[in-house]
Length: 178
Length: 112
Image 1 (tube, rainbow over the protein chains, first blue to last red):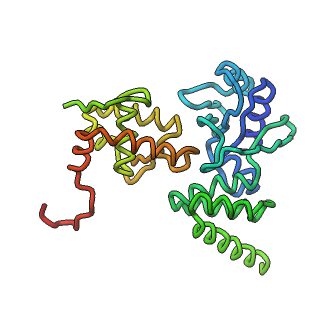
Image 2: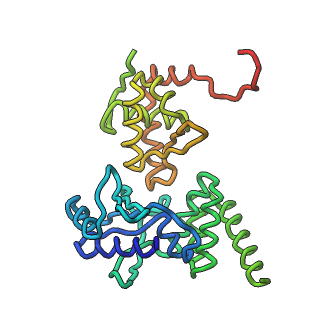
Image 3: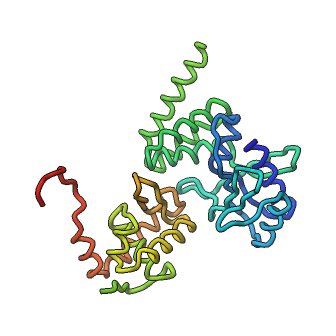
C-alpha cells in the first residue's frame, strides 16, 4: 500500500515535470518488500519546480497541502518534501534510479543509497531500527558493499560499518539454516 | 538583557543564535535556548522549526523534552560546524553565558 501510494505520487510529480526523488522510510519500504513501514513519504526535489506544480500534482491524487505536508482524506500516509540537496552524509552526487509501475514512472534512491541513508541514522544516533532496516535492504537487494565500506570510512564510521556487516552475516547464516 | 550577535547570516538573530548555541553546546532544548538567547520560548521554537525544515538541525524526543542538535546528516555538516565555530569566536558575552551553564553530570541527591 505504501509503495503504491509513493509510486502514484512520484508518477504524478513526473507527469507535471517535477523531478523529485523518493527517499527515507518509504524508499526503504520498497526495498524491504514492505517489511518496514513508514507513515511519511519523503520526496526531495532535484530540479526546478514551482509550488503550484507540486500542488497540482498532489491535488490530482486528492492530496491537499496542510502546513509542511500533503494529506489525503482516505490515505493514512502523508507526503513531505524535505529540503535538498539530495545527499547521504557528505555525498551529494547521488544518482537516483527510475522505477516504472502501473501508475507511471518515478525516481527513487538506489538500493545501495537507501541502505546508506538508513546507515547514517545508525552511525550518528546509534539508531538500531535503522540498522535493522539497512540489513533488511541488504538481505533483499543487491547492494554495493565495497562502495558502502569506502563511504563509511570517509564518513568516519569504519567500526559501525563492521557492526553492520557482522549483523548482515548473522542474518544470512540464519536464513540459510532455516 | 537581549543577546546581540555581530552578524545574523542565517536570517535572524534567533536562527543564528540557536545555531551558534547548538554548535557550542552540542545539544539543547527550546527552553534552555530561549534563556540563553533571551528570547520568548515561542520565538525560539519558531526559529528551531524553520532550521529543522531547512535540514540544518534535527530534534528528537527525550521523555517530554525535544532535544535539538546540528544535523549530522546534513551534506555540509562539517563545513557548517566550522563556520559556526568561526562565527562564535567574537561573541564573547554569549560564550560567557554558555560557560555559566552547568551541564556535567551530578549524582541525584547531592547538594549543590
